[in-house]
Amino acid sequence: MFLVAAMLASFLVIQHVADAIDSSAPDSVALAALKWTLAAAMGVWSCLLLTGMGILAHDAVHRVLFRNPFWNELGGGLLSALALLPFYANRQFHLTPFLTTPDW
Image (cartoon, rainbow, N blue to C red; front, side):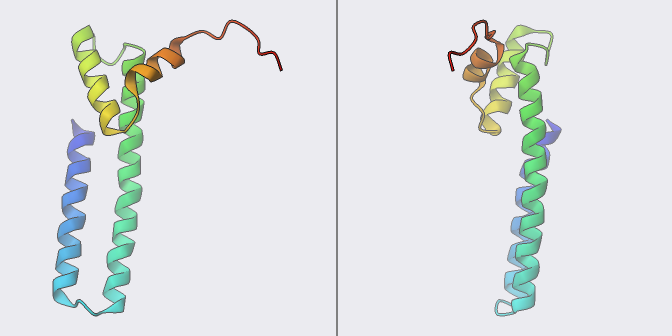
């Protein structure tokens, strides 16, 4: 829940900061550079949050995120969707053993 809430909060914060900068001095090059620097920094923060969601979704692929199978599937599916990862396809190709050697 923290990762999802932090992601939504980061979207709201950068939107309000960008609106405040635009309304105070819309033609200032320095403030525009500051706005885009803050947006890039928030993008890096969002990537870290998405990585955290991907790690938790990976735990759900292994069925160890929750003890209850229903919540494991639901939580893993939601986290995978928010991180834009294919949950069931990831489970299939991640857990399928590679038994044969390739014919290279």
